[in-house]
Image (cartoon, rainbow, N blue to C red; front, side, top):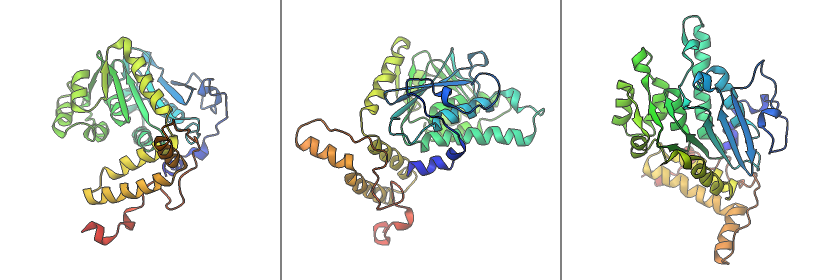
Length: 316
């Protein structure tokens, strides 16, 4: 299940303190060093808002920023009170990517490895997270900042936003951003961005699939919250199961994908909220979701059965 993926990122090592969901999440974090945290987070009515809060450094994804973002994502991730996450930023730049001052030869190769490994873990965590993650972009997103947008499940941007992977211009090819970018936009679009470093507009990003929606700047928060509130009104176990299954079936061949998703539909029907939704539809009433995060049936250890369980005759 998606929760298992979270444990792989060290949830047990994070000494979270429970707080009022209306309070800043940072109030409940363990101390991780002097100075303010480079992100802030608040949660209300199932919607967690994580803000990149270092506009003076163009919200660069420094190691500290990455670890802070990772903590905000992992904080009580399995709580039934969390339904959806929004990632946004202060200032005119969503994120300029890695902090290049951390990538000089003044730092050791081990430090450089930690930066890129932590960044990769954060990007994978977004996909493995049990709730949908929405990027709300109002400005420039470059390199690992563009990677962050591409890694989110949904991305809403203002029409003033732009996106680029300009590392090639400074001799540092955007190889890790290419992982998320190449899985989000067509190959030739990704390669042009990677080989030239030239930015694309929000409308171009929408056309190529990097964004879900583009709206005027004054409507950005309204539209993002509309989507988030809709998701928050739905059954968390059903959405979580659906998200995990969607990503699991993507790399499979067509027959295996249908087998995995067919099994998941059976699991979904067995969920309490699955039955509640079906009965509510038949009875012409609104469903009353249980909001229990532990409803998954015991027929399998994950939302989808593993590939080893695919019958031979099904693969013919």
